[in-house]
Every structure is written in structure tokens, then in C-alpha cells.
Picture 1 (cartoon, rainbow, N blue to C red):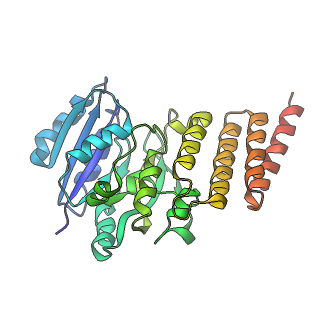
Picture 2: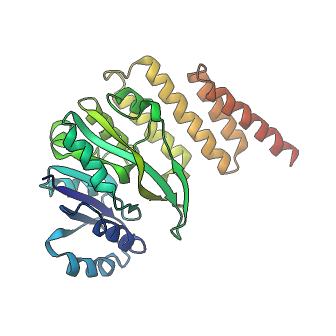
Picture 3: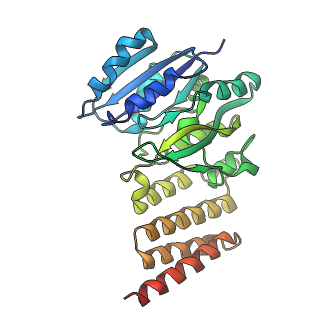
Length: 300
């Protein structure tokens, strides 16, 4: 029977952590252990965890460390893991009861699959559900390393389950990357293994006003680092590089629009067109942001 170690990094997430832990307890698959890494929290995380330590006993391990960032916290948990499979859950996200059973079914039935992911629905700070991300279903499964590199497919972290042996082969999370470190590891695994996909919502992803995505420039720099790092890998040549760059700048433009920076948004979208004009979504986005900029001028 498969066993799973659940990796939960926590930094000042005491408000939401009990919801995350309870969602593990509610799984229909129960051969799991939680590896909870407190990454230097300064809130009441210890108090929030205490009832679960009493309740779960050996099924949870609480590890404290100085603040070193998300990739390092996950790596601490991986080093402490012993199970055949590892599953990710951030301290503010929530699993649906079928999360582990649906993921493990694919991993057990398909030994050529290195990691599995599924769909997510967003929730706000008050646990109200929002949009469900369907992703790119045409590139969802199989040998999809180039699609991961080109950002044509998203692999949401709270739905990821992977074989422990994969990180022994390709390495752990890159601790020099404070964003896109997840995509970096998924690509390294996908270059060696197939990727499995569960076409169901497996988790609720909490939308935070303080997330990395609210800093478009920092996110862009992280994405550019990822693109440079893997350029030249199998399936990650010149054309995929141009597509990846275009998608990164288009995403930055859309984020800048939300911050009411219409001119900067337009300039970023035009850079996306320059990198890859053959994807009609790029000029469409630029056209939309051009109209948005003109409208901002009229408003004064």
C-alpha cells in the first residue's frame, strides 16, 4: 500500500493553518504523515498546531527552523521524509477529501508518471469560493516538459504529488529561487518522467493580497531566471523560449493593469508581441491594454 508524507511549510499562517490540517484529517485515504515546517513564524502558529499534535500523535511531525524561505522549508520536510510519495499543501490552502486518493490512483497505476496534479478553485480570506482554474486541458498529461517551460500549463502546488525518488534524481527545490521554484522542480521531473493529470478540483487555493503575484516586476525577474536556467534542455529551444518570454511579459502587463498602471501595462504587452507575435492572444492583449491606456488619458 502506498504511503504519503505531506509537506506543509508555514510562516505566520496561524489563522488558516487549522483549516489546512483538518483537510488532511478528512482525507478518504489515511496512510499519511504530516511534515509541518514552521519557517520562523512570529505569530501564534505553535498554539494553532498544538491541538493537532495532541490529536494526531505520530501522524504529524512539527519542525521549527529560522526563517529561510518557502523552498528551504519544503526541502527541510523532504529531508525528513521516508514515504514513497510526497504531497504538497501550503498552510493557507485546503484539500478536498478526495485529494490524496485521486492522485495516488494515477501514481500507482502508471509507474512512468513522476508527478500528478489536478485543478483548483480559489477561495478568499473568508473561505468563500471563487474561480476554478481549468488550465490547458490539451497539454495536461504525458510528456509535457516543453509545455511547462512555455507556461502553457500550470501545475498548482496544493494538488502536486510526486515520487520521493524523483528529487533524489533531479535535486530538491532550488533555494536561490524565491518564486517559480515550484515550476523549476516540476520541469526537472517532467524532463525524466511523464506527468499525470486529475481532471477534478482537488484543492482550494487561497488568494492573498500579499502574494508574490502582486509584485509584477519581482515575478517577472523570477520567470526570466527560470527561462534562462532551462534554455537548451530537451524541448526548450529557441521557439519555446520566445513563447515563454512572451507569456511572462503578457502576464506582467495584465498584473500592471490591475494596479492601475495602464502605460506600463501596455509597454509590457507590446514586449510580449515583440517576443512572439504569432500567438494571437499577445496582440489581442496589447490591443486591449492600448484601449485601456487611451481610456485612462480621457479620464485625466
